[in-house]
Amino acid sequence: PQLSFDLEDVLMLGSPTALFLALRAARPPREYRLPRVRGRFLNVFHPSDPVAYRLEPLVDRRLRELPPSYVPDCRGGGLKLHLAVSRWNREVSAAAGKLVAAAQALPSYSPAAALGALFRRKAEEVDAGEEKAAAAAAEEQVTLEGAVERVRLNGGRRVDLQLQTSLVEHQSEYLSALGSHTSYFGNADLSGLCVQQVLERIVPPEAVLTGGKV
Image (cartoon, rainbow, N blue to C red; front, side, top):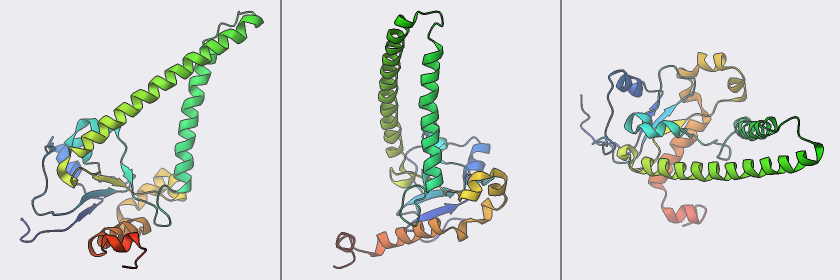
């Protein structure tokens, strides 16, 4: 049944809506927007929730390549320390893998005098390749961000928001999955997000700029 009143904002918590749409092979058009929602529409999910899935890739297939945004840490915003370290480790491992691949490409029979020059040449090739890869990644990021802006479900902003797991959950996927679907209302970061959405509606911009003193 349709609602008989308008909504300012909608936050779906662990909703199986994306799962049902995927099972029906239904893909909402990029221009679609819920008629009764006047503000933001967010799909918030726990990464280990077995029934919660992303909505953005259903609207635009290219957005599968764009990771979901994180719900900010309520104690200061941004990523929690263990998640930031994990991301940094992945980036370092990827860079180290490229260097190892370049070293393995060096012929073992080269004389010592030529080995240094060959290694420098390979290092330059790796650097050039990394620059091209970085440029391509930046171009792809711009393309994906443009794709997000064309999705009207949340007014051109990100729809999918992923909760940040705790350190214990990060270490054990099985433990994380056990209570994932019932963890939303006890999540401090999600509470902070809800408070932020409410304050954006009732606090004038001047109060934000002056620290609450209008």
